[in-house]
Image (cartoon, rainbow, N blue to C red; front, side, top):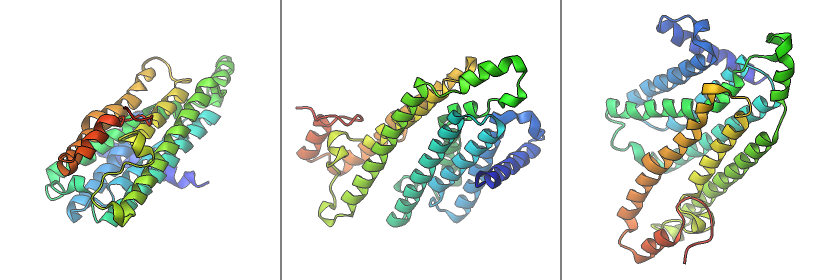
Length: 296
């Protein structure tokens, strides 16, 4: 019941985007409709953010877009247990992370990533464009799996095979277990970091307790695990070129490890604490991503 208004709203957005491009809505296909909603929401939010010169709803707009896109793809396809679970997992992740990041940016008064760009629309736009691509690529396996035709619409001879594909299998169980582990790690890591930073005794220090004692970026490890878990479950129904959506978890890992995650934090960390021997020892002894016992 809750999803119906969101689906209708996302369909309306996709329809308007298609009409602006002079393309009939029906010709876009499920994935095209998802892309249209994604781009429409992100670019509309950018226009407002640029006018107000604020980044405070950057992350929450991503969460909303994920929810809209997942529900739209779910509406287009089957109603298997796999589709329901995977859609629910993406929505749970998006709502949790989006609300956490929104609270953080309000509490901190802003996001340091945007200090030098929010006054320059062209540079500010790049962040929103990258986020639009991020939303489309990261959840691509779920969009594709959800968009599979309904069993009722298929030919009689194909129904048995379809039902077999819809059954929960070991890949689903393994994928959901991996997602649950990643989600737990990310939630715990975020909570530990927030509590550490809230303690006045830790002012000016880097977090080196809890999961952060075992890994420099345990929250990123959790993020990567979640998207690999979703791909593993979705891969049960993906065929042919659709399996190229393995680029989803690879893209997440690449972006976090090589582009916008670890490199930026490493640079900021070295600028603050690089002169301290304790920090240098922390970097040498603590694993980058996977929470495991420290090196000696």
